[in-house]
Image 1 (cartoon, helix red, strand yellow):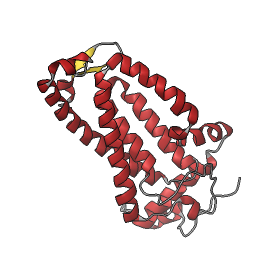
Image 2 (cartoon, helix red, strand yellow):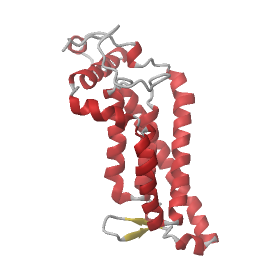
Image 3 (cartoon, helix red, strand yellow):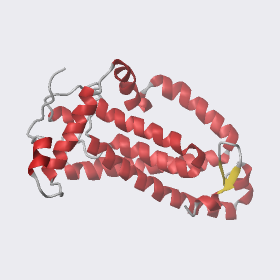
Image 4 (tube, helix red, strand yellow):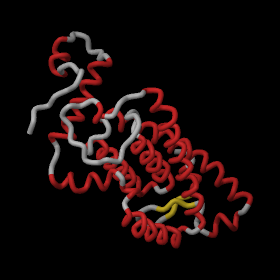
Amino acid sequence: MSPVKFKDSIDLKQSLDDRASPVWEVDEMQSLDQYLFVLINTHMGNDFFDAIMPILTDLHKQEIFMKYIVPVLLAVWIYRRRWHVVSVLIGAILCVALADNVTYRVLKPTFERPRPPAVEKVIEIRTDRYAGYSFPSNHAANNFAGATFLSYCYPAFTPLFYAVASLIAFSRVYVGVHYPADILAGGLVGFIFGLFFFKIWVIIWLRVERRWPLLALSGKALQVGDTDGNQQGINQTKNR
């Protein structure tokens, strides 16, 4: 394997050794970011990751996932939750859509950070599906927004939601189209939007309950399930 090289960057270890101050400057943070990128993208490369990460990184564009797996999961979800599904789906879609647009149309043009393929000399590019600026990551923002919103709606599945979001975020670095800082910032943006939208969703749905109690209760709309099949009221989750 070729030695690690950085373009227009300083040596990380030498930089840290030379500084007496514990305060890191922009160039040192960037060097650390580049170091971690090469570590994940190049040195962690293996056949297993090479097979699954390009699929996972664009899971929403995989035909078998969107045509077969998603419809089955939605059918089961709708059958068990009914009207509750509609309210959660609307909230999740709006949450992800806003996080996506703010990240892509506001944050990325503000920072204008080039993607790794335009900067790094040593890089393994494992996907051709990328465009625009690098910071922050839209994939990370979108998936963490959805994971945060859904984890508040269904607390028992929180580890699953965040595990999926984290794997997809990691895959963006592994396939060579984002730096670690990109996905960390995107994840933070997504978390903020997910939390914000959940609070709005609770307020709206409580009003639905008061105005149309039969509609709300028809699909267990005011309940959040746990893994044991027990239920806890949405009034408990709104105070989290």
